[in-house]
Image (cartoon, rainbow, N blue to C red; front, side):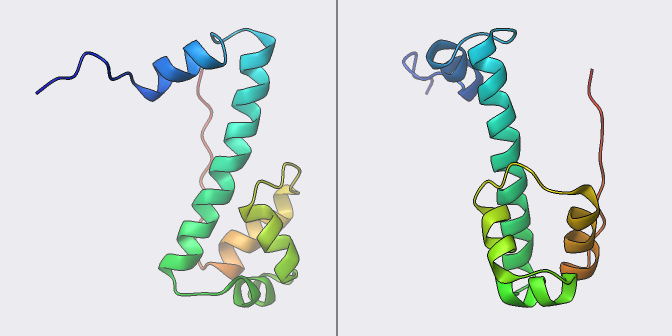
Length: 99
């Protein structure tokens, strides 16, 4: 049964934050991407059954950095991110560009 009062996430964001192309929406989208990266890393770590400390030790960083990354660290060095994914999680980083 369809509920006409339900909206998609995109529709909700458009209404509450603004349409794509507006400065408020651009700022929101940048923050959302950082949040999404942290959530993906946290999910991968948990799926592997690893603690933040274990990932940090394997990647040559510290637990507090992994914690900050999972909680929306906005500025992460690409080389550090690669080490966390490859050495800490035993995974492969894949990047795409969308137009």
